[in-house]
Length: 592
Image (tube, rainbow, N blue to C red; front, side):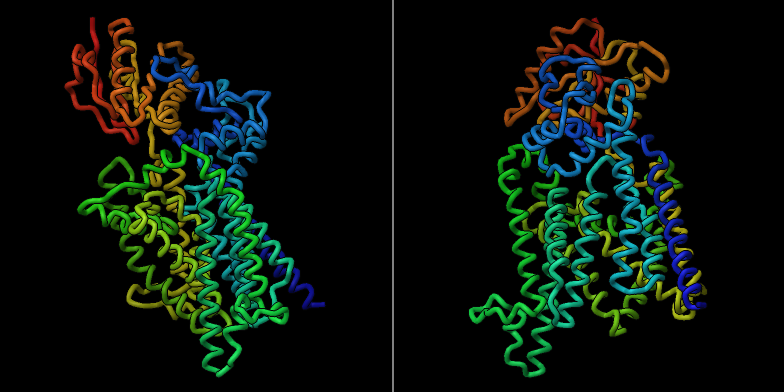
C-alpha cells in the first residue's frame, strides 16, 4: 500500500513539475508576441495562409498603403485549395503548416482590416510550447531518468533559440515536433539494433508517417533524416566490427540484408524493417520532388544563402555556426543600442561559456562511460555532429551557406537539448564532481545555467537578442521626423520578398495612424520590377518621378539599380541619417 502511495505521489510531483516548465515556456513565448514587427518570411506565411497571392500587387506604378496591404486582408471565399494553389506556384515550401495556419487564423478577428499577427504567431508559439513535454518524453525514452527529462524540459522551456523560433509566424516549431518524434523512433530502433531484435511494425510504420509529415512541413527535415542515416550507418559499422572480432562469419549478412544471399530468414533482424522505413520515407520524399522542381521561384528565394566568397568571408560560416550553437543555451543583450550594455553582455557570456562548457562536456563523458547510457550518448552526439558536418559540406562544397540562417538548426536542436539535460543531471546527482577552481558545486552550477537561460529568454522576448532582420517601426519613425512633404518610397522588386519589405513599412503606417486616430498623408510605394536587366527598374522609377506632382521626398529603399536622370533634379539629403536594420536607403528632396 505504501509503495502504491509513494508511486502516485512521485507521478503527481512529476506532472506538477512538468506543468511548471510548460507554464514558464508558454508564458515566455506569448510575452510581447505581437510587439515586434513582422518580417518578409512572416508576410509570406500570412499571405499564403490566407489563400491570397502577392501577384495582384501592382508593379511599376505608385500605389497606396491600402493597395499594398490588400493581400493581408482575409477573404471569406478563400479555402485550403487557394492556399495550395498560390503556395505551390509562388513559394518554395511544403503546405502542411500553411494549411493549419489557414484554419487557425479564422479564430481571430482582424486588426484594422488586416489579418491578426498575434493570431498567426500564437500557433507557432503553442507548437513551441508543445516541444517541452515532447522533449521530456524523448529524453525519458532515451535515458530512462526523470531527472534528465525534467532538466531537458526546463532547458527547452527557456532556450533563447527555441523562443526565437516560437515567436515567429513560421513553421519551424512544428517541424521541431516532428524531429523529436522521429528521434524517438531512432532511439527505439537503436536499442533493437543493440539487442539484434526486430523493430515492432507499429514503430516502423509510425516512423515512416512521421518522416512523411516532417517533409510536408519543411523540406530541410530531410537533413534530419540524413543525420539519422549517418547514426544508423555508424551503428551498423560498429555491429559489423564487433561480430568480425567475435569471428562470426555471417555478421555482415545479418547487418546488410540486401546482399545477394538475402532470404526471408533475415526478417528477424532489426535491419530488415529499418530498410523498409528508409524505402517508405524515400517514396514520401519523392512525392514532393516534382512540386519542388516545378517551382520557378525556388532559386530566386534562396539566392541569399548562395554566392561566391572572397578573403575573410570564408571564415563567416564558422562564426555564424558558433553563434547559433551558443544561443541554444545563452543569449544576453548583445544587440542592445547602448555600447556599454553590448560589451558587458559579451563579457558575461564569454565568462559563462568558459565556465559552463567544461561542466557540460564532463557530464556527457560520465554518461558515455556507463554501459547502460553509452548508446544513447552516441546516438544523440552522432546526430549533432552529423548535422554540423552536413551544414559545412553544403556551405563549403556546394556553395549553399546554411549557417547564415540560424533557424535551419532546428534539424538537430532537440538533440542538443537532450545532451544538455543529460549533462546537467550528472551535475545535479554528483555535486562534488563539478566543484573546482570556480568554487561552485554541481547543484549550484545547474541553477546558474538555468538562470542564465531564463535571462536569455527574457532578452529574446524584449527584442534585445535575435532581433528582427527588418525594423519598419524605426524606419517609419525616421521618415515622419525627416519628411514634411508627400513621400514616395521606391524599391526594386524581384520576388515577394521585396513586397514583404515594403508591406512592413505600410503596415506600420496603417497601425500608427489607427493608434493616433490620425488621417495624415501616407506615403506612396513604387515596386520597380527587376529581372536580369536592372535598367528596367530605372525606367519605371523615371516614369513615376515625371508624373508625380512636386514637392515630394523620394526614399530609395533597397533600390539596386542605376538611378534615373530625373533624380538629378532632386537634392540628396546632406545630413547623415541613422542606420535602420533591413533598410538601406537614400533620401532625395524633390522640390518645385
